[in-house]
Length: 301
Image (cartoon, rainbow, N blue to C red; front, side):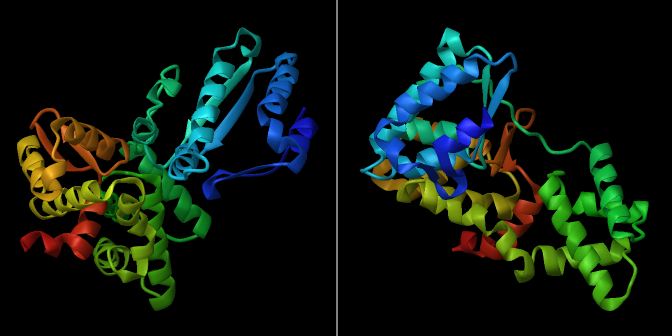
């Protein structure tokens, strides 16, 4: 089965938006794909296709006049496959660093995924986060005290695995360079000077840059204003966010668009809405601290 799959696809690289079919199959990719799935249907096993960064691929296709209609065709074809009674042993797992809902709404194809169950990957609970730090320390053969672990997790706030690895890595590098043990006080200094500093800026720059890549210019301007204000004041009401939105989109102002925009920002892990306080805030303390350090001053203009 895998041999047949490799004969069909010479390269799969969704992150760079390439699904390169062999030259002889390009004119009849649907026919070839259907043949592949007919063969899969004969298997007694459940076959899972993992399409990583699929939203990014569709977004790039949708932005190209040459490939926009192909994106729609692909989405509808995949949906038809999932609905077919002959492929009951096939499952699809779609993953992405951006929300697919925003992409498909822009394309007018949101119905293409209404048969999917959405699973949000939540941050680690405290116990798991501490266990990850313990395992990282064991792997690096370094001594990491419980107070130092607690301080690391307090500083980053939301226990996103990637953020945990970043602060741990910076602490290990600093300890190796100066020969000093990792202590809570040193962790605070490392967080302030390294994690939030220019040394680690590239680790988080995509959060800023992708606003330009995935939102229209007037939306990007409004989002950056809202995020700058959130970084400075900590939390905002929905009405306050809407006022900043209106100030920055001018004639493009639309309440429904604003509602979609705030939902997309939640799905893309920029903000969260606290249902108890009825306030918006950054989804991550680290991201808020980083935004405040590098872009927060613009909010006082």
